[in-house]
Length: 417
Picture 1 (cartoon, rainbow, N blue to C red):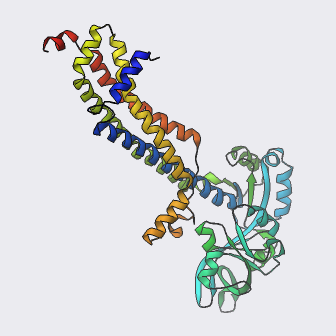
Picture 2: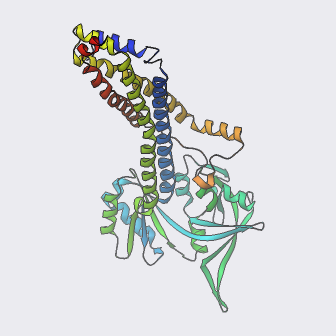
């Protein structure tokens, strides 16, 4: 693609201290591209980590497909679950089908109170959902019995309770009728275990209990509020929702995780795209600096270009010389930027903790970002794509200066010497 002569001249110009690689503008271009590539890789990795972690925890705990009844509680849910499992489409794509009894409550203890969501679930199902990434303190989930609670670690700290202490749950939805009107249901249960999921919304606002306990408390004996279906592939929900719509009687509503989290998923995608475009401007500005550097190089080497043209170097070769010279700046910047970006993305959490210790400030508040650790997910195709975009922009930036050099008239230049 490039001859030996073209490479030799291009790299000699690149190493020239006055206008080549040694010039301030060339260094600014290279550092700008390096920082732009590194920033893009780090930001896209963190955004990817946010996307996967949040969806994995929110969607993973709530089910990929959820079945409701328009009248509220679902009775004969075990019969319905057996019916779903017998369906070939549903059974081939699901890993588990979990009945849930859920309701909002006010949790109080030691003079403290906070809003919470109680979720009645069979402990075997809860145990399978918290096998990875969730730490359990206190009693094993398999040993939790009727009338005992598993609360989020942040919630137990907010209420200042330890294992074995009781929490009073107050619910207006499960009100008890009395001669003087409906009274909110108030019942106290001991907290025997706590969990740390790493997601603030769950750790501070969820209380799990055995399904039978929740049914009694919510006054929906032998019924559940909804049924969660967990799939092998979370993206493959269409076939399951269509099969359930045909299978279930009238009155049932089927929703997948996209419907239930449409605003959240859309906001993440839009934010990711906008951040990419904004940060890409850093690389574009750096690439424009290459134009300035090469234009000055062409002007400085005008006489050399004229001499080369008289010795028989073609216009095409002259253009290739300056294209190679400028693109090399972009390639070097992209190479070191990729290394820097990958290293920062891999060690983003220790880096955050270091700066947090250095400044003495919480740089990633869990209550704001819903996560206790800064997530990062490197997608190598994205890393390669960002590096190639930087090199492509550097290549495009060289075209005008290279064309200018190729169209230098050696007669006019040498006549004035």
